[in-house]
Image (cartoon, rainbow, N blue to C red; front, side):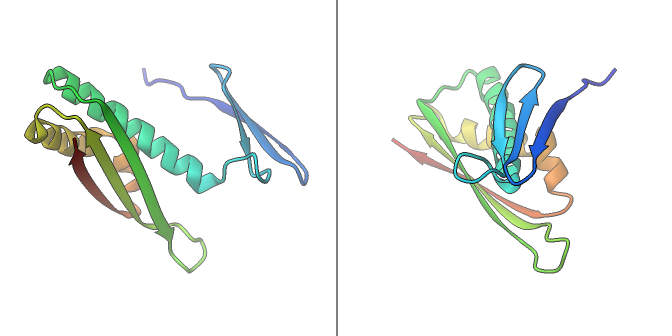
Length: 133
């Protein structure tokens, strides 16, 4: 049986919304300065899913690093509905012990990340991995 995913969002007229997950996490949506916009949430979801898939793979290969920074940007098409046209996904890995192993892990993560694969059906995703000491 598939995992059930559930989120509840209450919207208050002219005040935005508040999302609550089953784990008790709260996110303010569409409410001004202290809230998150929909595409920001989408990119956060992509970053977290892709990173967790990447981490699972590189840890199985017994690789290590100090830090992975994920930077995602994109643009929407002009005609309505303005769905995602392309998305640039940049992973910057600091202190990687074996760059080739991380490159292969990143390619596999792009292949197996469910959110990456879902978004790739409507948008061009351009993944890049870079290394810094």
